[in-house]
Image (cartoon, rainbow, N blue to C red):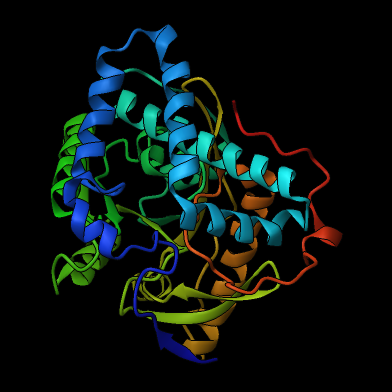
Length: 336
């Protein structure tokens, strides 16, 4: 197995001169975070859907690079399609993303409750009954941002949520404050790269029975990676989650939160996996990455339009999709 480094987050939107010119008014800038929260706070319920459709349409036209990235990445999942069908795929994904963002602010800022059903109750209860800590690993699918708030993840435990830094520092501070105010003392938010001792802090939390929740599908800029596969294509997974789980000797629990309707979600807890503590470390990481890759791929197949990946993962996708012969027979739904 080979390990390498990535220069920047492989799924973050590409940006350049326009971002430097617009600053906080760029699509990832703090203006849109605050404006979105303001909108869901003052608009009547009946006005949210038409306003969301309006803004989705605007960004669909304006975000050419993101539109192209969604198109190319979905081609690996859904196979080739004609131009009009591809545009519908892109729009459907952006619309779902807009709904997830809207409901994020409703949950965090406006304190509106979300209904969530739990799929994998036995696994979750077994984890809760154990005094051992565990590591929840998810991907940028559906309601991934508020997933740690939906099930009672901690009871008496502290949940440490590790997020990738936002592209705008003010936006990062704003969102961090929202999450912490909504969750209270039971949840602590960390940003990858915040501190050189973050890894040691998370390791101690796991060893003392805490819960760590992080994304396992995006390596940090400059971070170490382990080679894996996604939809038959090469894919770099971050080493961090595997190294942390191995050092602490705890389970990694794949967990995905799908949007199923208006302020409704389904939390899917998948069977835990262990990173082998003995033998070759690199081989252990590779096996764990293969396992996690299959879980993420399965989740994307179930809800392809809730996969929020806004940069080309494979800039030259094949004309035929490897997903064609192995697609999950259940129909995909997007909760809208």
